[in-house]
Length: 157
Image 1: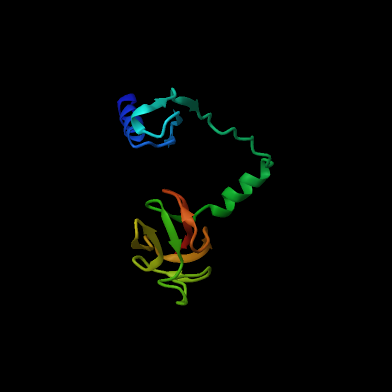
Image 2 (image 1 turned 90 degrees about the horizontal axis):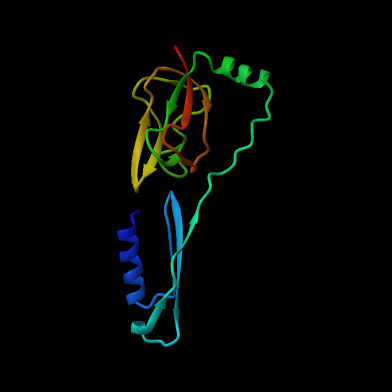
């Protein structure tokens, strides 16, 4: 967000008698408090915005041994991973109470529905792009998934 846009937002909030305004984006967070001695919006004094930079979260180094990643990599060798094409909510069945599309051990073919991803109230069926056996379902029903997140692992035929 640029300074011009922020000034416009602050002006609108001040003109409408807002007591406090918080604006947050990916890169920054701004909190503006308006101080007023009289109830009339025309006499509202504006405090300078306080810009608080958000530091990147500190990530601890992995505590796993070297053998664990090697084992995971070898067990996934040769598997095809179906990844989420967008951010959405994962559903394993067409509707509540209906049977799931697939479960571990099921054989799937190209074009077969694996799940539904809901994005912006639109239900999108995710289909298998490779034939084989489902060896892992990587997320829970009704969970939020990110772009590129693994959904299924398939052992190709």
